[in-house]
Image (spheres, one colour):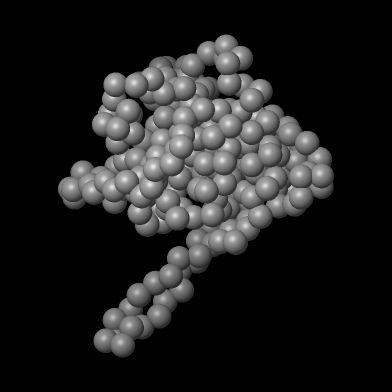
Length: 248
């Protein structure tokens, strides 16, 4: 288990609750929030690993690195002599639908887990509230994992699961979707520090390129459904290959 909000986040504790239902849990997460780190790894700085707590069936570690660093540390050091049956990343504070899957440290870690030939699931809640209610995320995260774990689906397997805000009974169900096409348009707010140096804060808005498409994750979340998107890492644009072969 890992995440990108840090080992002390409420969503990470909720994910541990999900994971405990399936077996022994080794949880390793960044010591500090690492949102937006995608597949980043630490190369030029040392990594510091610390065991935070240990109890029956659960070991929790913090690492001074990125979410992907956490996955690598788990597979190649802590669990190098043991078989891992499942990777859970999350539960993220905030949606990882649409193009966010490319920026997300939570999904970067889930994708990394799939590189090790292990079923991997990224779990996210659409609320950014640090004290958000994760009850529905735990419930539906458990249901999705129960459905696919041991089903014999071919590997690699990586799922991007997003849960809308609301009580369990308010959510309309689960939809298997595709990633919404869209993009972020950023705004940089310029300020000056006490030394009269310019600095910038990044913000922005997501623009949905297909708001009426009913088979996307954004549509599902906007209409009260849990979205489940199977993720692959092959970025080859096969539709352009024949045309390029004729040109080059």
